[in-house]
Length: 152
Length: 152
DNA sequence: CTTGAAATTCCCAGATA
DNA sequence: TATCTGGGAATTTCAAG
Image (cartoon, rainbow over all chains, first blue to last red):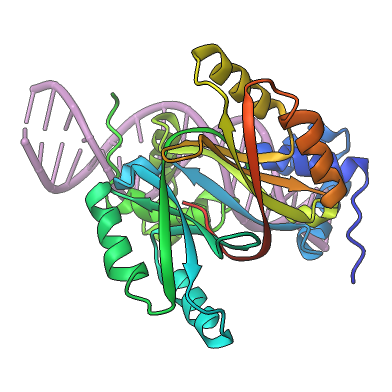
């Protein structure tokens, strides 16, 4: 594997860019205590080695009317290879699903789902998730309030 | 409330910036079919009205050695106002906690937690979460695989 | 450090209500 | 006409060899 270890300066670069990805290189250099060109060289290296995977804008989801968030846990009826593949493929294609993790414990998957409201959520469950034969049970918790939501 | 409704052009701006937040304004303008100055004006308006909440770099978490992800659900012993406030304040201050949501159902909070391994996770539970008097029970599922993880 | 590119501001033109 | 949105030019700042 390529060398990915970041020194203290790299870490400061990462910290600044996590806080504001649209910083100019000059501004970034000043904040981390470098001049512009070594700062840019470090930044490119962080991008090329995959330490920085990309940059994204954080958009208020409510402007699309997606105001309701839910956490759904799913168990599959049997854990055959092909059923798992089918479930995961389906999940990747659904816009409502923000996150999906395979987990240890009594349930198989934890999903974070966004929708426009209760009715749309119900439709998502009935017409998408429950329609998959491999799904044995679904349990939903609705998010009343988000206390924290961080990037890495 | 200020006008937040985004028209088709605004939506294209958002889409491009979600895909790559470090696009230059000129590049952005070209992609959405505007010239630079109205594009920048729209961008600033989206920022000022809170449609765009910020920009962030996506950093590979493994460079910090934070390779293990867990979903923890927590119930509080009693739901008194001050206990809730105390719990939420504590959670906000812990670096291990990436997300924390107050949810409906049998459990009170769902947390996404990152740590360097089992030992560090155990320490997090014992020395931080379980030390809060208001916490009645904790249940952990470890993430074996992440099928999907999207931005809004 | 220099050269070319980008951001940002200001002003004007056309559409719309 | 008053308002909203796009375009272009000039100035300052930035990127990159």
